Amino acid sequence: MRIEPLGETIRLRPGEPLMRGAQRQGLSWPTICHGQAFCGQCWVRVTDSAEPLPEPDAKERNALRAVPSHLQGPTVRLACQLKPTGTITVERAQVSRPAPTPKPEQGQAE
Amino acid sequence: METLDGGARVGDAEDLFDPPPLKPEPEHPPLYMRDVLARDPFPPPANMFEDQQAYLGSGPIPASRYFSRDYAALEKEKMWSKVWQFACWGHDIPNPGDIHVYRILDRSVLVVRQRDGSVKAFVNACLHRGRELCETHTHQNELKCPYHYFTWGLDGSHKWTPAKWDFPQLDEKKFSLPEIRVEEWNGFLFVNFDTDAPNLASYMGSRFLDHWKGWDFSNRYKAVHVKKTINCNWKAGMDAFIEGFHAFASHSQGAAISCEDIGQFDIYDDAPHMSRFILPLGMPSFRLDPRPDDATAFEYMCAGFLPEALGTDEGRLQPGEDARAGSARVARKSYVKKYGIDPATVSDSEALDAISYFMFPNFMPWPTLAYPLVYRFTPLEDPDWCVWETMLFHPFTGERPPSCAVNDLGTDGSMVDDATELGGLALVLHQDDVQLPAVQRGMKNLASGELILTETQELRIRHLHKVLEDYINR
Ligand code: FES
Ligand SMILES: [Fe+2]
Image (cartoon, rainbow over all chains, first blue to last red):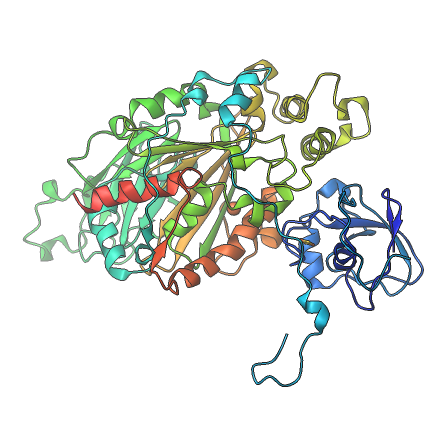
């Protein structure tokens, strides 16, 4: 997965939601509910995807209502819910890599 | 994650992944509401600086007050029978013969527009065998009981007795409908069952009346009225609307534009029935990590108030403008467009902020254009249930538009799907609608039997309990 405008590429485990994979690899991701599909803060815009994206389930659709209306759109998804099946590029300005990088785990950066 | 018998694993090792902890919050954020108000380019009315927080301590509240039938009985006997309570918006009964039926627990009151434009209120029971004279909001030329046609005039005077020959005991001159006290404030009608109570103005208190001098509702009409019967105690419902503390978690979508963590919570010794909060909008919560910058907060506000300005010069922060000042600018512009109001009459705070007043026990008016709300929670006989009403009062010019119809969602209707007239508020109320029944269930489970509250952010909940207890212990 490529994250813009940060410009990092990370590898997700099979079936792993975007946000969790990013957090596991030390990225800071905007969230309040930490993946409960409630706060909608983790939204991303998917700008490119090799495989068709899985449709949002009811839980994700419900929480997508919490994304500010001017940002909503068919390519906007919740990073805490979206489990891509192929390579994708997403855009979210507030994703960052905090200064003290935690030691890398398996599922390392590409 | 292991199953209880220690057998098959139902998750995998990744489930043990710990998300990063939330930001520690050991101190008040580096700013107070009064600082925000003081540096607003267009300053607010003076009353908003009256942040006299009486201190109510940090003690717990017994949870049983929210579900005990004995406590509900005390509320009914000692409080609801003594207080001035919001019955209806006066313009809901504009014409002679218009009748509003106000229900509170097992009592019911007819609020009746008179031929001379004044209002009278009566006990809603036929003096014959007690049938309710009206069951819902209606228009009548006289008050005629549907059961046997005993009839009274709109002013409550007796008019007709069926089979008069068979009621030798009746003195028709003394057979008027018993009146209930009713008084008006700012277009709202209040009733009181207690014949000895002070009048409405002294009940509300001069501080409340002074605060509201600049907030005249004579140019407002009721544009939205949504009603829902909800599975929580009336106080549990109220609690969610007199604090802002839950907004960050429950209404996270607002965190980039609303900073309730520095809100102002006011109660006053000289105005025992009143409380207030002011929560700043147009600035991100200090609890957000990372905290969005001014441009982002402004963009979100602009999208809400003036979406057509996004991408234009107007939709960008001007030199020297912070998110709050820019937000006030676009908000004011939207009010001019929507309501035709004079922008010179709306301070930054009045343009943006969530300002909520509470007049004990059932009237929660929000004075400003940002959220022109009135909330009301009405207990039902079962303390686990109440009726939750949300009204929006919009300004108008020219002829007064009629009040909207009530959208009654019953117990199952959805704020987001069935009350779209609420606009952006629908999602917020839906989120509360999801929380409240779970609060009601959970409170009964508390091992300690006690609720703990913050000192300031939930001060108004403490105040609600204090006033209530004062009545109960009277
Ligand atoms: S992290 Fe809260 S909805 Fe995705
Ligand atoms: Fe809420």
